[in-house]
Length: 449
Image 1 (tube, rainbow, N blue to C red):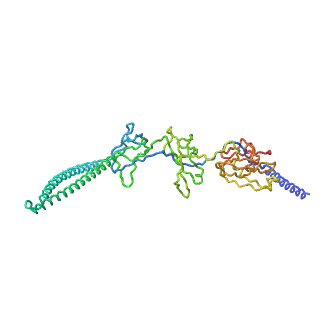
Image 2 (cartoon, rainbow, N blue to C red):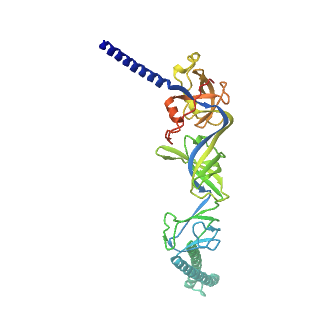
């Protein structure tokens, strides 16, 4: 009788093992259930912005250079009596620096001496002309008397011819001295021009401010030699008015079509991270630049800097307000992209037309663009059903929708999630170790919409 008993025990053990495995499988699968990740349709404001970076620049900058070569000898004084340096406030005509003028002073002295010499030559030429005119008068009188006597016994023919020749020579000498006087005068004018040029060059050794403003850059030091040849060396950079600034923003060619003069712009700088500054688009420069096949345009944004907080050449993170909507229905873009499996679609909607394609970043823009179609999904018992809506503006995260009977506080589906009982128990166990990087589970809804 022992063998049958062993066989029965073996059979019972096998059945118990199979039953235990089946219960474990049932509990494992029963511990999982499907739930939808949903979002609530809300009403609010939507702003479409274009983000770009730029640099703060003074609106008007004067680059002061040197027109002569030489060594910097000394810097001037600002309105407060301090030596010219970075941040110095200067008036128009303020002396900024002086270049060694010894060579240019010698040129001026040489030009003065030459002018004096030419002036003396002019006086001599004038005196010679007067002398020749006197001789012409005498020769003319002798010739007139000779003509009255004529060739006769009282006046030999040779004497007659001599008076005539003397008269002609005197006239020629007068013409010659008049030309010499004109030449002397021209030489004096040339010498005067040379003197004026030398004096102007000497004056260039004193560098003065052409405008009222603030020095934002000093590019030379005392003892440094500046060389002026084909390119004018830059010595100082002066901002005329730092109370008015510009942000030069590089805008991608894909976004520049939505930029227009007068458009509102907000920007931040790292120097004041908790403050947002405002500005307006001044103009879009037409000279585009290409870097690694990326074309960008420079947009000038005018901003007020009356408080003096903004400094030149700070990096600005700008946002252009391209379009805006107020008090409209908003849904996440993920709800427009989600497409349910066929077995979750309610039977009566199986033959519905395919959902329109919606890009990750719907191209919303100013009013006047043609409306676009989109599809949302909502719960319908154990299934889902579609709602076709018209799409408006999108900021890449949310999209304006209307139509389809959609209203505020409705729930739209973002996707499907599967949560296990084990994971839920672990998350609810107060003694389980906490993982700071573990994302919180999304709330699940089991009721019908």
